[in-house]
Length: 459
Image (cartoon, rainbow, N blue to C red):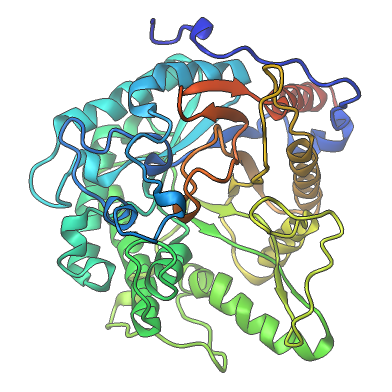
C-alpha cells in the first residue's frame, strides 16, 4: 500500500436523503482561514503497546488491573493505527480537513520517561508528520494525553517534582525533533482529568483516591507546563505553544444553587485558567489551595500562543438533585447535549481573562452507531456538530478570537474506562477486523467545511 493510497480507505457514504448542511451564511463568519480539523490520542488509537521498544504506561497497568476498565478492555490493539496510519492519513485527506491533532506517546519515544530515547518510536512520528504535510494537513501535537511512563509513576508520578522536570526534558526533545514541522504544540490535554479522575476519584489511571494528592498533582501539571514552554522556547521552537483544557459553562438550577455552581466552575475551569493567565489560584471558600514554592506561579504564567478548549457539556448544579433539562437529549455517555454552553463559556472567558487565540480542540458525541448495509447514518452526531458549530460562530461574532475547530474524533477508539463500548468517531471501526467505515457525519463534516470556506470567500 502506498503511503497515501486513498483506495485503501473505506468507501465514503453519500449523505442520507433529507440531510442538509447548515447554510454557508450561517457559518461564514468563522472565516475562510478558519482551521477545520479532527483529533485523536495515542493510547486510544495506536495499539502496538509492546512493539518496537515502547515502554509500559500507567494506562497499560491500569487496564491490566481487574475491574478498572469495562469488559476488561485494553489498548493493546485499539485501532492498530501504529501499523495502519497510511490508511488513516488517506481518510483524513478524503475528509478534506486542514489539520490533525494527535498526541505523542511518551513511553513510545522514551520507555522509562528518562534516559535512552527510542529511535523506532521517534521514527513512527517522523513518518506520520511527514505524511500529513505531504497530504496538505497541518500537524498539531499534544505532548501528554495521560499516558505517563509507568517507570515514572513508580517513582511518585505527578505528585513528584522530579516528574515535572522529566516532562520538561521530554518536551524539549520533542520540540527539537518535530517543532520545525508542527503547526502547534500543546503541553497537556485536560490536566483536570489527570488530577481529579486519575488521583481523586480513581476513575482513570493511575487510580488513586486522594483529594489532597489530586490538588498537588494539578499544581505540578501546571508547573510542568510552564517549565516545558520555557524549555521549548529556549530550544528555538517557533511553532505556536499552548495547553488544552476541558471546560464548561455553569448553570444553577435555582438561585440558591449559584454559590455552589460558582465553586464547581472554580474547581473545573478557574483552577487552571487563573494560574495560567492571572498568576494566582481562586480565592474562594471551599477551594483547596495547593502547596506552591516561591517562583512557581511566575513559572506557570508563561505566555500562551494559543489556548485549546475541549467542550462536551455544561456544569449543572442542583443541591436538590434536579437533573438538567436535556431538551436536546443526552449522548451515549449520558451527558446533556447543551450547545449554547459553548457560546456561554467562550463569551464568559472573554470577559474574565486576557485570552490568547482559541482553538476548540475537542467537541463531539458518543453515539450507539451501527453499520447497516455498509453505512452508518449517525444523524444524531450530525445534529450535535451542527448545533455546536453554530454556537461557535455566534461566539466569534461576539468577539472571541476563535481560530479553529477539531471534531472528536476521527474514528471510534478506546474510550478509557469505558473500553470499546462508546463510539465518538466520524469513522466507524470494527475492532475485530479493523475495517474503517466513514459515517454520514464524515461526509457532512467534509461538505460543511467546504461550503463554509466557499461562503466566506464569496462574502
